[in-house]
Length: 320
Ligand SMILES: [Zn+2]
Image 1 (cartoon, protein in one colour):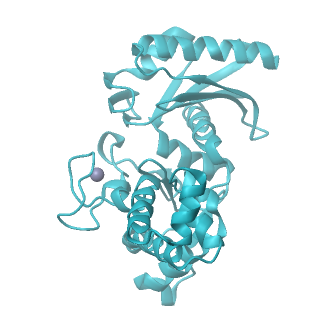
Image 2 (spheres, protein in one colour):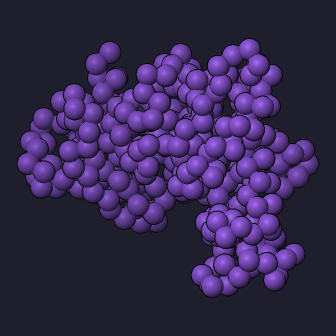
């Protein structure tokens, strides 16, 4: 069976056709979100793009069994309503109802990080594990928690937001209104901030040189300078990894999952990021001496995880 997966971002919307038996993407495309448009227009654009995708991939639109949508906000998975989405300016939008009316198909919606976690769990790097927590290191820190093979949501599936657990009391202000949230220290945005501070403090370092040559500071800058053996960059990366690990130890002591999956832009750094995280995490966990190591895995599906997970949610709810 073919299902449609849609990953709605603030800038782009990814739409894919996923074959549930072969567990692969048959075809996909990306359109501009243009978030200033009314929500109805965006949803109509998604469905008409889906029709075009079907035509170009030689898939009968009528054979698409359902549509799953990942949305970067607070989504009630049971009602399909987006109560709040800052990037799109949506409040109390009954997304699945609207998509069902426009498309004539069954629709499901969930938070985008939850979709990404579900995608990795169903098709990606943690297939077959029953307890997995996905963390995305991007503009913020997103998370999706899978416990005993089910996405954990809490009331109205608004839970599982690990990025806003407080790791430093009365500290940096977060967009959410709280202070000292994990994402203020462990996101890609935070790494850029930390790198800029280190450059200011050490203007003659290799780190400063790498930034000057590329003309800007990104989440890659510190890792690029680390590859050149720079001590200042090493301090930045070590410190950043410690912030990530602080959050993971908190989560690890509560949930003791089989694995943490690290996704988002920063996860592309691979082993220099992932390996020290796994070592420091296991050294810090209370139960680590008596239990198997908690694995730390790099997300396998890249920026397609959300789209694939959204489609998988539509599969599941259609089959049960
Ligand atoms: Zn916060």
